[in-house]
Length: 123
Image 1: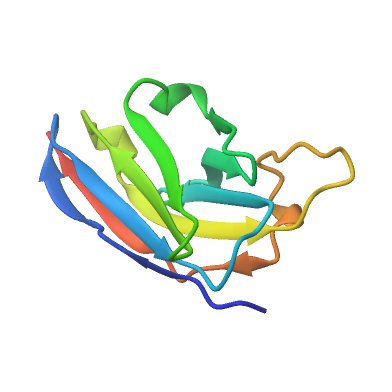
Image 2: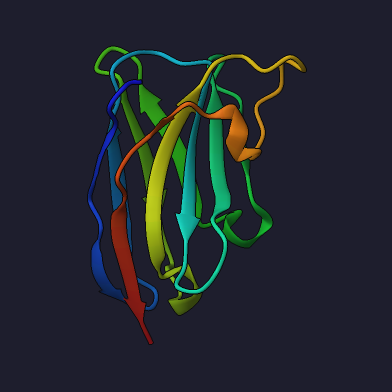
């Protein structure tokens, strides 16, 4: 199991920005950010596949951008216009090509997970 290391979390006021980074150990077909708020289930936030195709959960569209540095195996999440409801622990995860060929937020498909980085947004 590969070790993923997230960084970049912190505390910001509403409307602020943060960029999360995730150091991975290689290129994976699906590279994804999840988050888990207190007393809530973990949810998918953004996906980037090996071809660079991206998808986002509706609540972050237009505010968050996922990207990757393939040469350095780093996954990023640029988060703009942060809101209190974005407060959560953010996790990166990587996985192999699913049978459908399309990456999605089903957590069972991801074999590698980081320990998380905390994002707190105050109003």
